[in-house]
Image 1: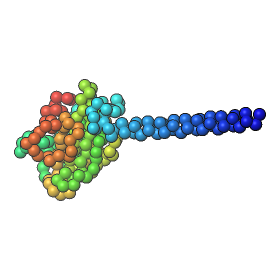
Image 2: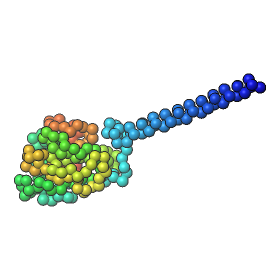
Image 3: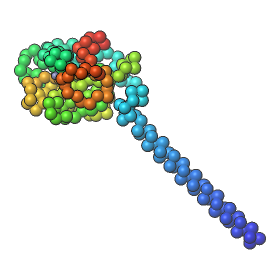
Image 4: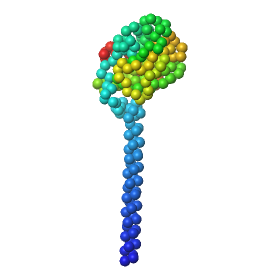
Amino acid sequence: MRTHQKDMSIKIQAYIFIICLSIACNKADNNSTKRTQSKTGTEKLFKNKLDFVYNSNYIAKSFDFPVGKPNAKGYYNAQKFLVNNHLGDDWNAVTGGNTDLGDPIYSIANGYVKLAKNYGGGWGNVIRIIHKMPNGKLVESLYAHCDEILVKEKQWVKKGMKIGTIGNAGGQYLAHLHFEIRSNINLPIGPGYSTVTDGYLNPTKFIKQNR
Ligand SMILES: [Zn+2]
């Protein structure tokens, strides 16, 4: 009888041990699943376009100009795409000089703010927005030399939303908006001017084709 009780007690202890172990394993599994999930989402999505987890309420169905919304009224493109190896457009007010300092900059379409920060150098404050088009294509719009940044990284934005103001990158230039559109959303900030144009689109042409 005593031996039997001892056996039972060992068995019960063993069961308790197994139950505890399985609870612990489950917990560990859950944690590792959670870690994997947090790696996906927006971080991973810039590394692999196919993993882009994009909010379907912010599909970029059409595009407008970034100043003088929606058609750039009151502004002109002072240095067009590829002129002097320029990788974007330079938007200035027709009134000239610094008259456009502090003017509004608008998101050209619905999208996701990938980055919004001061890059220093010739760039100053830069806003970078990822847009997903109805055909699934991803493009990036980039707004540089901003006086103010009015959006935060990882924020969703609608077309025509005021995202910043025109600046001069800390007095380096007469105020203007340096504006790029990229077909490659994974490029670094870049040189602004280059003979290598892979991953860059003609912004004005692109907008006109996607109104
Ligand atoms: Zn420029």
